[in-house]
Amino acid sequence: MSDKEWGGGASTGEDRRLIEKLLSGALVEQRRARRWGVFFKLMTLLWLFAVAGSLFMSSRSIVPAPAGKGEGYTALIEVDGVIASGEQAGADNIVGGLREAFDDPNVKGVILRINSPGGSPVQSGYIYDEIRRLKGDRDDLKVYAVIVDIGASGAYYIASAADEIYADKASLVGSIGAYMASFGLDGVMDKVGVTRRFYKSGDFKGFSDPFQPEDPVAAEHIKTTVASIHQQFIDSVKLGRGDRLSDDPLLYSGLIWSGEQAEDLGLVDGLGSSSYVARELIGEEMIVDFTPQLSPFERFARQLGMGVMHTMVNVLGLDGLSVR
Image (cartoon, rainbow, N blue to C red):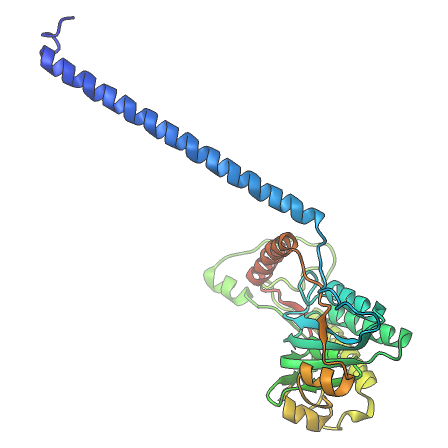
C-alpha cells in the first residue's frame, strides 16, 4: 500500500515519529519501573535482615550494673501500663526483672515504680506471689512500691506485696474491686427485626453472648465468681498491709483516693518519689534499671497480635474480667 493511500508521505512520517516517541517513552518507563522494583526489593531484603538479626538478639535487656566490686545500688523495675499477658507490665516481664534484681548481690533495695490502672487479676496475682516468695528467700532485701500517676486495682494488688508503699500527694491509689462487663443487644435485634441463630453445647456456654437475653442463673453465677476474685484481692491486701489499714467501710468498695487520702487510710506509708526512697530509705542513691525491655521485633509482633485480639473483644462487647 502506497504513502498516498495512507494519506500522504508527510503524514506517514509524522505517524512513524509519533509511534517511535511513544515506544521510546514506554521503554523509559519500563526502565524506571525496573529501577524502583530493584530498590524496593533491596529495602525489603534489608528489613528482613534486620528482623532476622533481632531474632538472634536477646529479646530482653537490662541496663548493665555499674562496675566496681562491692558497690551497692538500688534496683528499679517499672510497672507501666495495663497489666496483661504479653504487655510490658505482664507477669513474665516484671517477674523476670524481680528475679534479676534479687540475684544481684550488689542490689541493696528494690523499687517497683508503678504507673498503671490495673488489669488482669491473674497477672497481678502472679507478680504479687513472686514478690512474697523472693522476699522470703532473701529477707535482707526490702521491696518498695512507688506509685506515680496511678496505682489502682491490679496495680495496687501488686503494690500491697511490697514492704512499704509511697506515692505523690496527687497520685490515684486504690480501686480495690473486680468487675466483668458486657453488652446486652438483644433488644436492638428485636427492634431491627433480625433473628440470630446460635448453636451451643452446654446450658450456659453462651452466657456472654450480647445478642441473647441475660440468663438469670448464669448472671448470678458470674456475680458470685467476681465476688470471689474481689475477696481474693481483699485478702491479699490485708496480708500485705496488715494493721496499717484503716477500718473505713469504703476501703474495699472500688473507690480511688489521692495519695494524701491514701496515707490517712493506710493504703500507702508516706509521700515520696523513687529518688527519695533510694536516697533516704534504701541508702543507695544510684539507681539501676532492671526493667526487662522487649526487642523491637517482639514489641511489633505482640502489639499486632494483641491489637487484633483487643479489636475482636471490643467488637463483641466482651471486656473480660478485670480488677480495675
